[in-house]
Amino acid sequence: MVDPRKNIDVEEDFDIEEDTEFLSKTQIKAQANELQKLGTSLVDLGASELAKIPLDAELLDAVMLARRILRKKEGYRRQLQLIGKLMRSRDVVPIEQALLNIKSAHKKANNAFHRIEELRDEMIAQGDQKIEDTLVEEPLLDRQKLRQLVRQAKKQQAENKPPKASRELFKYLKEVIIG
Image (cartoon, rainbow, N blue to C red):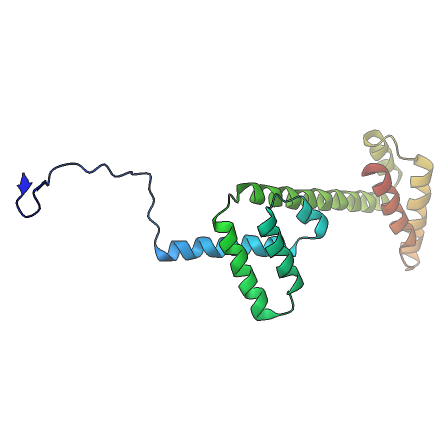
């Protein structure tokens, strides 16, 4: 069938790529906000952590400028918007992966500290039996030192004194177990 006004075949299939995804204005704004949040998390990182993130010179300069103008509210907000705009034209997957690695390292460290705190508390509560069980798992620990610190911690608890021995026990466990 031919449309006489335009002299073209109406039934002709137009080969439109179905992979092209059309985004609404709301979706575009949501993506921009996500990139801006990612930029904010970059600004909040410490210097050593920021060095681990794969950033090009322009984006790194923008992040460093945002860190310097942190106290100036409107300027900081505009700088975060600029960082979000710069990130739209870049592949953010490596940046997100590096941030995830940094966060997981913090989580691992926190879990190790919690494990040592629980171990210390169990040693103080259960005494020699828990010390023996721990020595099987961690043979580098000194039995005599553990018993001494546990006895002192129990004595300080009974006398309502500051938990100096408990802190020393935690410090010793941390040094030997974590390194």
